[in-house]
Length: 577
Image (cartoon, rainbow, N blue to C red):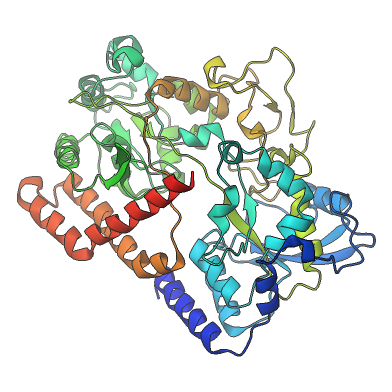
């Protein structure tokens, strides 16, 4: 069964169960989440006072259910585990689920069957608001409202300093259900590089051999220099028609390629020459103009983009492989020597080896034929993927354990970069940051040993959590290595900064009813649009003959109704701010 459909059915079943059961295990706790905090009294006498570390007087064991990551060599003999256990006085017992949808489905079945769950759950699809709320309303989770108010000493201080809170927005609103219950602990960061992740890279040596360079970029108007579509197309044709890698085979060069990994969607990147095409966490073909949210997938500009993509395909500038290959295959293609790729679309250049990273330079955005030039911008919002199960014997201690994540501003760095002064160090005065003075970001982190990417490690869990309220993860300093991926990302972003859109879509908050009513419609429409995008590009659909049918099908599938809901959610969010 389709996983989304399973959880839609599962959520409905849970609502039925709640309505007709006499009471659930968590009824009193759910009510407590909505009463005055003055009535709250700490029940666990083993706890130290809020704001004190360790969090317990005598050691306890808390189990953590989470998906396994094969790039983590050992969760028990692990630097992050050891750090958390020493910090809190809690012994961690890991209950590892399968990664991906298999683990998520298992958890859903356990909740439906009323099975005993680990004390705390992390990831496993819990970032999905509908799924998290369904589990909570089924009595499987503990609401955290009272704990946040009364036990969240470090958490509340951290949240107050976040960008959202300082702008007048309550970050917790992203985690509340319609009854005001908060079922998950906040993970929040605003990593600068992730906001500007629609990146691509071109082979500088190929361009030089063609007598082309960034000096020829005439797009961008007065904001800066970016390549025009004419430059872009001429470069791709030059890669196609010449033996630029000198191996005697004029047919092995690949003008442009991409994949299905992180921000590698080549067709979506090219769309930005015509329409705003965000393929990050707001991947719904949204755009905003004059304060109004709309879909780009049925606009005249999008139709022209289909013509352009098909022209590229007919001119053999890409093949179907570039649409469907995974990140491993893409990396192998780009890394292969002598180099044969003209442009590779990838949000992260770290998937390529050091030599390839030196050979490819950022091509930030391309100005379209009608002068359209913008980068996409992703506004990061809180996530809620740590929860406490109703089976937990020490729920207050479990929350205090989560609260400890905010006790040190450097904690998110331990999750990402590893051990301080071994894997990374604090930047010294005068060291160069990655994003230039105009970003306003002061250098803070110097990477010494790479523990992320494709490396197997025991430095952390290869997952990120905590509240980066000082935005320290953005404060990367340059180590001086010209092949440092983060340095190269910074160089790419410097060319994108002037083209940040004045209006851009953000992650919307939907009610449970909205999600249940439209989840299948949204999935079907998104799948259909992506399918037709590839078919228009490769000529399986004809722009002139099939466009009207394509638009009619979207309306039959409910695109107008879905847009009305999205616009209402966008208006609610604007009013909340």
